[in-house]
Length: 495
Image 1 (cartoon, one colour):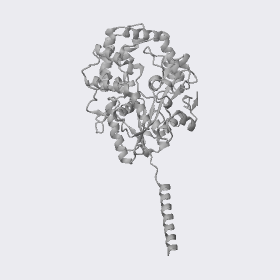
Image 2 (tube, rainbow, N blue to C red):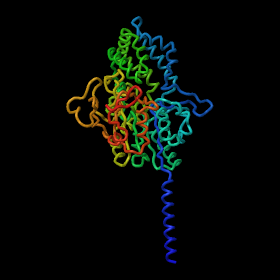
Image 3 (cartoon, rainbow, N blue to C red):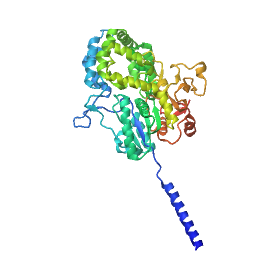
């Protein structure tokens, strides 16, 4: 009897162990959903969205064809290139003002969008339900979305669409709602975020508001607008127009823009000729040096076009905010008693807390990657045109504080020494907020990531992988160092 009992107990124990092991073997591994957050202009805006009267707004309020065929505008604009007749600036600014007001892109004085405007594609379902968004797409955020779907499965990838004009702190609240809805839908404990350009600022605002319980496992910032962009210095009336710099910039863009695939466009602009560009520069400088004309430009054209859009104001670099506010409020362009000012001031403080917030997230277990690009000159309209940029955002800002040489120069002395210095001596990443979590891609433009390329695959694998996000881990897994160069097909090689 005892022998029979022992055999029975052994059989039961064996059965229990077998069932336990099989349940482990067949247990479904929890997949962390990934949410892609686009940047400025990454989502279409509509009047009367989701109704039979829905009408799409022109992107950025600017339709090139209608602008070029506007007789009132073009009759004066062409004079900017000619010595034969001086432009009538009053007429030009008046026509431009009428054109941009008609676009209806602007927000009200409190930074709110018109009540009949918004988006038509706020989704809490995965991209497997929205294949038209990403299938066949090859570039920018939708190309990235397609890459994520290929790597992670479309049922595990989401996109956060939003009205990109609005205060990113408000947008962060909407992101919170989406994250909660996705967690409820999937049962996942956390999600991962990959934010492009202004999407990085949205992530920063989200982290600032909810850092003690973000529900985020991985934060991947791609060319993020976390610290602004120096071209916004125009709001402190920092205008610099120089024919030589403009011609040099156009020549530079022939090879730099999209790997040279649009060289013909920049050659065509250059073909306007030295003389005509010299005349245009003279006329632009005439505007820049005239307080009267500058005020007419800002108050008569820019104010009613984008002057009340919080997101544009929130792209001012932290260190430039006070100077920009002072100039614009003195002109009457910004009302410091308005709701708009309260919003941008609050976000300015969020900018100032970014370093502290991102370090907090890392300390509490979050995996973080910041990708910043360089190798392209700034737009030649301000005194900072020789900053290294990704064509739009300055490398020092996108990287969270890298020390970067001026374009065409290299770092010298102590700045050029140490393990975080790029082999080409252009960048020292030691001063970044998270130097061990920051990567640089040379000659790859702002969010111009193409589907199927090494560059796009890398950022997507960072967003949905299981490995640690740090220099050592990424180098071991993929072979990529902190400083990479992108070829014409966005193939990556270590510098």
